[in-house]
Length: 146
Image 1 (tube, rainbow, N blue to C red):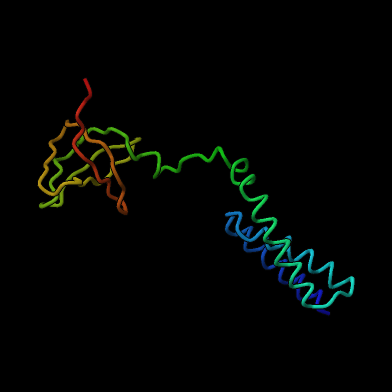
Image 2 (image 1 turned 180 degrees about the vertical axis):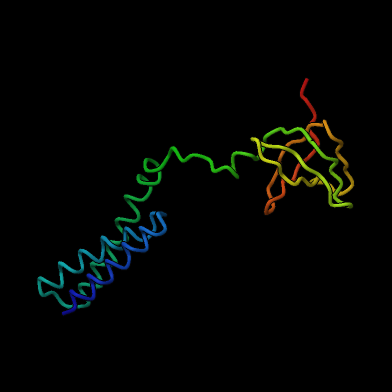
């Protein structure tokens, strides 16, 4: 009867892993599988719990570093992350006090604000994206390297 609980626990851990894709609960699902097998073999409940803890810990310690290194290593930047550091051309005067400023990035118009409150950027000037706050690009003056 306890094996049913281990199977339900393992299924819950697998569902959490599928939802998060963070390689967090998969190791414990392996421990729950071993505990299920121990339960079916008729071993004492506390031995099942010990096996769950030991197997989960071993899987976590020895296989997680390998998985993190080799699984999903070629993660593509999202649109958000891809914009950070990009140099853009200002299309509308950037003035934080008057809450104005715009630029076109990859064909889309964005609201732009300066990283530094007193800095005003004029149309045609270049700026570098340092952050994104909601739907606003936060920029700093761009100085070309010589």
